[in-house]
Length: 545
Image (cartoon, rainbow, N blue to C red):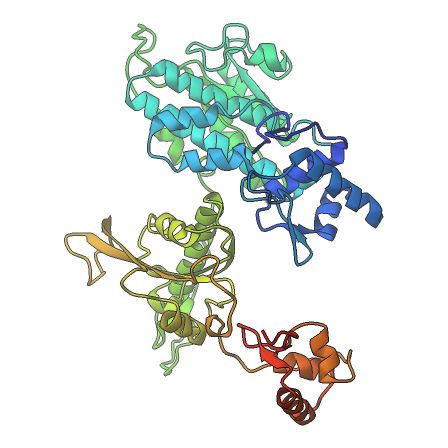
């Protein structure tokens, strides 16, 4: 069953139409949140401006279940566990499919991924605020545009100009469908569709106000775009050939590159300016050349314009533990080195983005600065299906300079050395759970590298997916007693369900548990006490089982 969100919302595989529009909105929300959501969470997303009564929430869930039906094995496609509502394992989305395709190395797959985009994402949702607030709309636009650029670049490498134009057009269309402030401007890009037909059909679909045929005036095109950007638009200006860009140099270097910094960040000038280089046209007015290099030298065009501060050091005292790391870039403890901590932050951000794109639920990340912040990475994930730990390792091995990756379950804090050592000792069969890879480049300073290459390894320190939740599979830690008196006797508590000893102490507000131990002894003498597989105390059944 596929929930299609890359265009008009549609649930493919539903056994009947949705009786309530809100029910289909609920299915879309849960399909994009594989970890599930409580009633408070999904109701706030669907109705952000009001509080809905419990019967309304119940009827919405019921309507969604009736439309989805049950899976082939009879299981509910919208199960609820511990107060959290989930989309079943067989419910997926076309966005997740596109993310998987984006990780493929086969360019033919990239084109099929772009074909999944049918229009404006989430079109038809009654309330789409959550798609913006949670970043889904921006993430989808970024993902589609990035895949389109990869496909276009690969097509150009093969000399397939038509394929490159098709991929670029898909990226432009995705951006325009997501953001009404994206405006295309250029010479012959409207009715003609551009010299290389990159914008073909876009004016017909989006109108002449958003795909604008401009006069042959490059300086005017860029100057107009700067004004539009300052008003909140996102202009994309096409210069017909890069050889004609020089009349616009004044606008690019004097205005576009400097406005953001000249206004101290108050004026933003987002936008793009594609211009064909070469193209095989061979026109006399456009000989083969690549004149784009000077634009990289204008401060503010490709990066921020910085006025680096001048630091005057009047004295440096020698201490055992140097306090001014930003000046000396060192010290006795590598974990306190500024460069190692900054590198660790960067690696953690890259890892988070990589795993999110791979649909892995990350709960915590830590790149230990004692390992330079670059070479070791600890990741805690919440597994929703078998194989996710290996998928996480495979994705992270592609990060540059990261040598050793340790993946643990979400009950392990990757920042605690004790927790990591415990996971390594109890959840790591070395003959099965090591993944290695050789060949990536390394830094010249790395003593383990050979001829500029390194070996990497991933360590799977997770429980097997679906392993029983028994005492042996839990990290040991001192219990924290939180009395919640609910029962007068141990028997009453056990009649309510199996309990561990600390749970009995909490349920009876016991100070030290002595009276509970005595009552357990009496119940055992009477032959009515038993232990559950997880170690909890329970009342034995009448047949003695």
